[in-house]
Image (cartoon, rainbow, N blue to C red):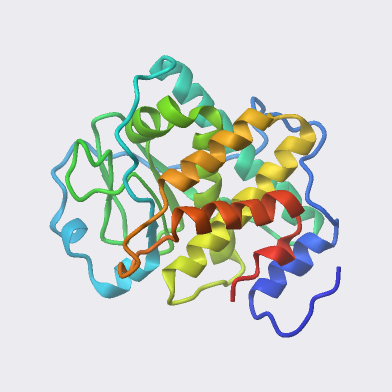
Amino acid sequence: MRVRGALGAVAVLTLVLAIFGSIVLLAEAKFGASSGTVEAAAVSEPVAAPEAAVAAPAEAAAAVTPAKAAPKPAPAVDGFGTYTDYQRSIINTIDGWWESALARAGVSYNGPRLTVAAKGKSANSQCGRAVANPVDVKAAYPAFYCRGDKTVYLSSGWLYAAIYSQFHKGGVAAIIAHEFGHHVQHAIGIADPLVSKQELQADCLAGIWVHAAVKNGSFTAGDVTDARKALRALGDKKLESKLHHGTPTERTAWFDRGFNSGDAYVCNHF
């Protein structure tokens, strides 16, 4: 695959992944395998939403990429313990896949730190925002990546109640893969003042990973459908928002770009 024109930092990602063509999961990698190591950070005790989470400085807001609240959750389809086992497995799988993929291209990849706020709890970030289920802590964010401390923040309570219960494993995997996409952007120096461009590119990178998972047999057609539904449900309709992530149609379209191609070049949004 040839790089056309000056693509800036995204060309690095294109060249890195183009070295071994369409991205596919390693044959031995499965969703239940611990194919990567994620550095876990301590989770704080339950706290009220901090002042910084309500009115964060502009520079902090620009550095964080939160997911918006999901629709009203449906009844849980599985036990919370089963869910957390899956959450742990999929985090390790995604992280390990990126490490292996980039290593094959000769690029060193250090996975993000990880902070998971347990059900009913919250944790603060260096980006002036707290992670928690918004139902429990007003003004908190349920899932985001903070460039300031290179950490993926997840609320297991929110992912379980709002995503897993409605969009099952495919939805959860898409949300987590999206946040890891932001870490990949940061690792290779991709940044843009327009939040929606970063968000849609992260959706595309998530799609590339799902493409690989389907090819490997770890993701089913039903999982892909659930992933699309989750991203559509989290699309923004308030276009004037500075943290606008993209409309429901845009989010699924950019996910499909990555999923249908498996080629990093199609994720160029800069």
